[in-house]
Image (cartoon, rainbow, N blue to C red):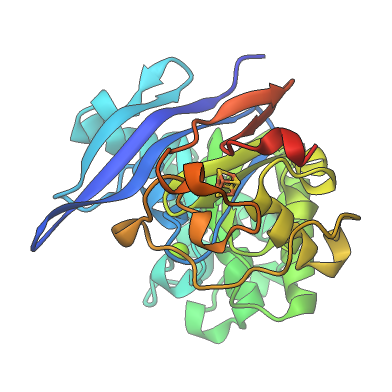
Length: 321
Ligand code: SF4
Ligand code: MG
């Protein structure tokens, strides 16, 4: 199957006082139909900006090059009206903070019901379907809780309500930006399970951005590793975590006990994450890389396929294999 979404050579620059600054540089990735692609990166790596570019909510002064293809349609070339349409019907988004997406002055059941009505259900049918959907996302006593306002819900229940909103319109693609970061670990695990089962039942595609590799190892079929606005590695999650082909991924994987790899080739990550606003020359990871050589400071490594479906942007990837 061709992927549902393809991002091709996407670069994004934001206007600033001293000209424009790059936040994403030549990013390419795919989201397969009915599968999850995880985008992992430290804060400032550009991962949220990537989600905003896909859903069409970049700041007005952003300039973009490249393509974002939903099926065969280039969303970067679509007008504002079409982007809104895509946002309502085909792509939805789950945020870290559900209060930013929920209307504080409208009952939860009504908010979910309105999305269902937009898709053609009558009022009574939509109200019933809203309660069904609230049941599906694990909100207890949904017929009663449908009458609550967002502030009457706990953090975990609000996240479930936002998930109900995000899937109510039956989107082909759901974007999730750190959807469980604000929750405690037990609730986090339940929400991730919920997302996975909804995805399987509804055959949705999902693109989840997170700084948490453990989260990714639970939900992402494919993994994209971002560093300073560039892709350093991508491939099937299990393969990437078991046998990373980039020193940054290797260091990340080694820092998470549950996904620790055997090799001790790379020491824990020293130094601060690079900001795309002050991206180091050559390989942006070179100031922190244990394998760096002179060439790394001057020559930007291209993303290249080093094994079937395994892409890496490191001059010396072969030494990691
Ligand atoms: Fe390290 Fe050089 Fe590879 Fe960059 S290109 S990850 S600095 S070895
Ligand atoms: Mg972010």
